[in-house]
Image (cartoon, rainbow over all chains, first blue to last red; front, side, top):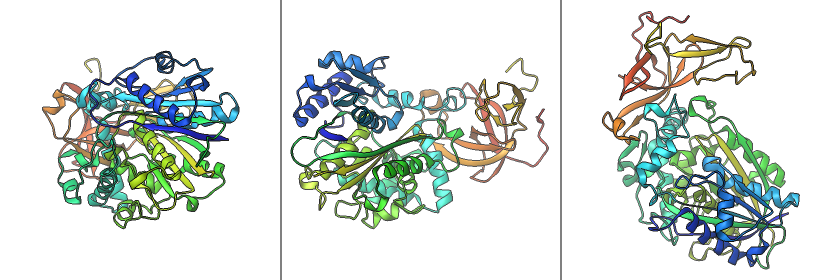
Length: 379
Length: 123
């Protein structure tokens, strides 16, 4: 059984002077303190990647810098799904017995290290090098294509997508460390400048600096505890040009398998941690996961279903859309928030009645790679 | 494109074993795994599957022509490809297109299908 033993998230935003390794080290040190383990107890290390520090061997570069000599090290690259995939790998390592205490850590100075234009160009490369990128396409454009189909097929309106941006900002307003914390109205989202229609600036997550870390372990610490009860992936395509018409099908496939492995159903889930690089990402995922009816994610948000006091709280830290997006660690923040809500550690933003089960889902590429994890409170 | 006998035609690849067709250059059929690949030309006609008007360009070259419309077009031969779109077209519109030079790059550009026979028939 894999227990979540320690968690950490740094502030997200512009963190001048930070580097990939300094941010990873900050989060790792805090997560280790939280776990109550000495760094010598870490025998497994899982890292992601960093666009500001491309390296063939990021895991061992970090291990050397942080003073670890793990028995197992691995760098994972699955775009936005990397964080969830790293946590799934950590679960596999613990359950197989290959490692007892796995440090999962990511961080990147994505904003201050290269600026927005550099990041936009670097990220666009998830597109096809000859058939997509040379057309002047960007990640927002890839997701905007998906958004145009979403609106066309479901009858949802742009203002429905905007509801999700309003909700994430509302959640970030009292989350310490959030990149964007000033409340926004529906009208402000709708009036924000166009990026790639139908997506506007406030439909898009910011580019941030930041880091997150998690310690997964074979033994739980004292006090409230959470375990990984099920995990699964699905990979349906890479490029939006080759995506199935049901573009988010991978979310349905991965989450169904993760829930089956956990031995529970969607109705048992009391908290949602869902990747939200764009408002349409969140809408498509919530609907593919079976949480909302087709086209209804925005209406569900408007009705209060996903608020802190609602029946199914969602990304209560503010998500990528408002807490911020620094790459791999951006989606790990959703996991950390879920664990803290389940263990009653969220202070003023604590949801009523610590949830017994949470569903965590990430996607990478253009809804290409998916990883789902089911979390369960054990005491 | 100077050595191309049909300048402007959109290249297709088709599996000789299973007939699957695609536009992203590949050495092996992604459906059946065969390596017998036939290169052919699309007639350049299809239907718009998705569309976006890009305002925030990735670089200065594209910023100089922004906003520009990008779409996914379902070619009559089967494959879906990304293209620039011109004129009054929306999801579901019939479109016709070919390779043109835009912002210094040779890319597929589609516009409303005028209904005339294509001058770049499939071979």
